[in-house]
Length: 382
Image (cartoon, rainbow, N blue to C red):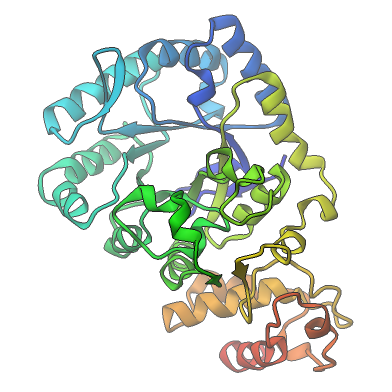
């Protein structure tokens, strides 16, 4: 298992995490078995959006002996009502649910207090103005939550939240189909077939900017919907071609700012299929190869960080240099962390001999030589 820093939170998470849907309706024995598999594989993070009390009690029991080593991302603004999950923006109910969740999980803190399902401008402003964000920040100051986040499907709202400086973590839907669509307050548009009827080209600029801004500003991304609710794994995928679990995970993990992919597992076999990613070959993880077969979707001139440009005869990690270049361009300056990471590279843009081998291998027609020239100019030779 590989591990990543969750932005600037000081929290380290496994690149594969657990969603909670598969734990609903399970017995304690079944819950314990899923955690045994996950913990033995090195998973140390779970997202708990559901306020289902039985699930919370069982998860809390299963994690009791490893609580301090395990990262819980649990959602504010959800409640259990009439035996089903519901969303609330009533501050009193939000507070009551937080206290209840701590009791049910048998813990006195959460690693991430995630403000749930913020997809509209109006709702984001309400959360900031009506006390929910203040409450979350108070919890952070008290140590009841270690970091504050929001979950969203809308890059426009997510950008505003990141730019506000009020959040440490963003839970966001990341996959190669959703990434093509512009921000929309109607989440249904992400999986509506009509959204994909016309040819689509390249990443939506707001989503690309979001990932790069999260990376440069230290906001960690935890991923939901990496498989599009399973739709991307079938021939009914909006792309018209099925992707594999490994390809979907590899794509999400290659986006700037991403720390962990939360994967739903309804059975031990489901969980083991996700964990197979850690031993998958480069070819099995190669999402660029399947992108070329999408009938209605084209990527052109845009670096997808897929690594097909390698190997460079001078040893330059071209995808990483390009990522640092894009981060600097997004910010209009070079963030200190980007400068430090660039300086630590063994080979840099200034080592490029412009042989063009990388461009001949790139499946997306990226002008890599020009990118290396820009990086050389922006970063200068140390």
